[in-house]
Length: 188
Image 1 (cartoon, helix red, strand yellow):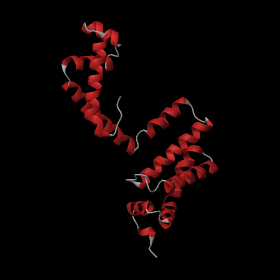
Image 2 (cartoon, helix red, strand yellow):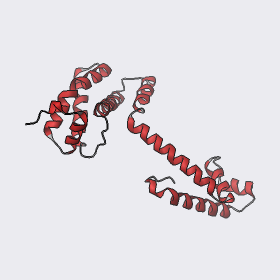
Image 3 (cartoon, one colour):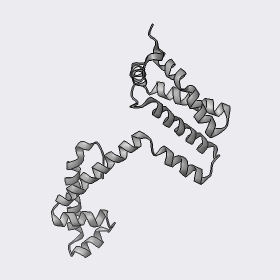
Image 4 (tube, helix red, strand yellow):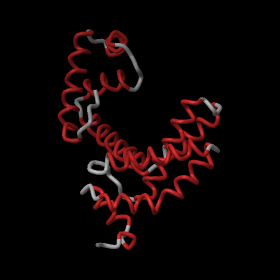
């Protein structure tokens, strides 16, 4: 029988994806004290802290086949913070300022950073494509999206009909959708 305590977190994560019960037991033994301390330091209640750790570990097991876990300890710590946040929100034990602070901490997890970078790249690409649109089409799009002007306001500003504004906007959206369809995002 293999000595699971000798496995790295990455090896354990790979085994979890294969639904290896012994790997899960090792993760549990390796992390439950740390996660319990993290939870208890926030909620100051033994039963709540135990419930949080239990929920985090059960969630890890239930989602092990599909979860993307690059760093097991960071993943578990973030999941624990989310559980704490949701518990405290449900019990309304914290003020608006604490809520904002908790929310700010949670926004810093690795997946969120990757999402924001991907979103930033997508926006940069979209802005480049907007600049490539024909002038009238580009102006209609920018007035609508950046300056939040209505079709009527755009028509008056550009001295064109509202149907022309609508046509140019549809043309812009169609072109931009075509350019970003491979990015797996629905932009409009």
